[in-house]
Length: 195
Image (cartoon, one colour):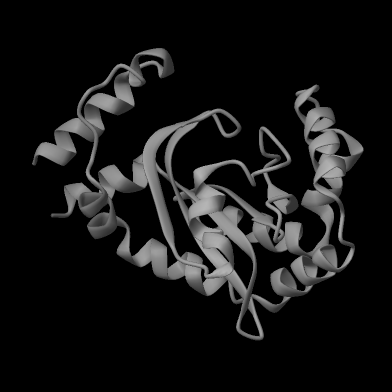
């Protein structure tokens, strides 16, 4: 009951006040509520289209300096530029768009390469390079790969409260990137209501 009350309270708070909220769902509470979604994200990370796109981008060996340059350009405009659109319209981006369209409990999904640069995203993320963020570093796990569950927080790119689930992408036993999927607060509230 405590988690349900907390989720209702969080849903009514403006983003600026959420940061001040002292009580948040524990990782164990989130894992319990999101068990099915975690398995769904792990299954999505096995998609051959996603693996091929990530493998292809990794083979280009783009330098970190170039990735950071692209990241600065990406963040400099809120508009859907040609580059941002290309990551929604490539094969992996179209796959993510279909998944988001079919599953209203997901608010976003994006795939990164082995340096944390976006390979595909729907909708466009607020930045291009994820390699300096915990959702990527914890899941990529220095190449060892592991599932990571972020906290419930306001997501600026989708303008919703969500929990991000990160799952490693594997190719022939090696971690080649990360898939991140946001699960909406509405889903968490509905799951809690069923308990």
